[in-house]
Length: 427
Ligand code: HAM
Image 1 (spheres, rainbow, N blue to C red):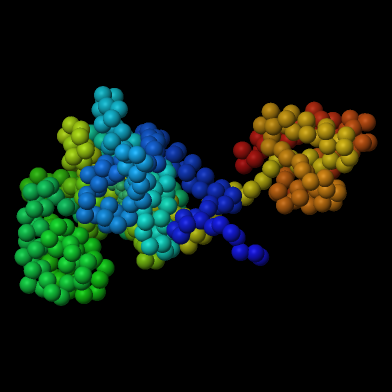
Image 2: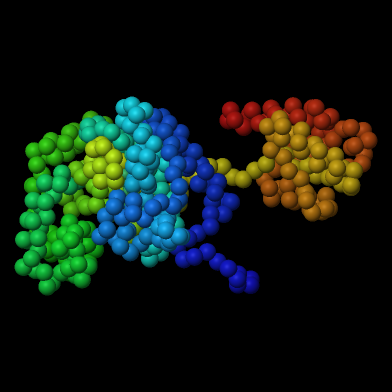
């Protein structure tokens, strides 16, 4: 095959029709469950102001410092959204969603962009679904967000996941811990990896997240954040654990779990799958009680998570979980001759208006080739129309699976097709 002249950018992939059916199946399931949990969908633009993302996520985070796709036009600075928590909070403030009363339970599904080094499960354009509960500081909200996340994977049939849980406390707890961590690491500074050396001053917590071998011994002997939590943070964390226990959601406490954005406070969590390889995080989230205020709103506590759709898809493949149904069409109209083609074309409308999916040949092929095409399209029925059929107003309807044929009027055909549709829905 000739090499194509144009291809997608690295880390950006086309989702072709056979895969789109699987995506749609998962998206529908997620929407259905989101509504069951009383989350409402929110849709925001693909592009945001650079300043929102920098302020929201933090200047020194990997995402902001290395991974955003940014450009300007006139005086405006745009970024392709790398995540949706900051944009959703922006929308919450901009449209005064607090005035709708209560806490806002929002969900989203859509594309995000991060200029990371592409590998399996890591793309530059990828998709997330996620939820945010804005306006509640209650640990019940943390538990609900986690329960929704676990529920989705359970419903899909992915059960061998591990929930990692941590509390990174309030800013005071974190400050005390940062100092303790730095005192612990300082004598070993020269032996730390280059990345960790860079993080030492500005973002020492992220050193705990290091994947570099040389950092391991110092991380393993480091003080634990959970020993530095304030009374209030500890009480919140205990309540989250208690509620998860009530919901029979098992978790592992991981005092080294720190997340990649600066907006987190208190609860942090990740859902890990052994089926994913190196990029093993299916989903991650936590509390961000200071973000709304940070980007210009009234102090408002919030909690949420986001999950990678591509990683969900990989896990389903690894576990052989079937997603959705095969491509099919209810009816393929096989036409022989010009008159029949004209009749066939207008008959399509009658079928479609009655909820029957229908197609025909567009290439003027022989009857044999059209029947072959009907098979390829996985048509449940073929309707065969030639001059004789038109004259007599009776047509051949072939049940493709059972290979039997009947001569029928158009009305009778419609009844059979509609009945078969109801049958499909009931089975
Ligand atoms: P995050 O951990 O950066 O959190 O991303 C959440 C999930 O998105 C990851 O666990 C992973 O499954 C997927 N993901 C991230 N980057 C990529 C990539 N380059 N390619 C494929 N999948 C990827 C957030 O985005 C936060 N906004 C989550 C949150 C919501 N926290 C509070 N509310």
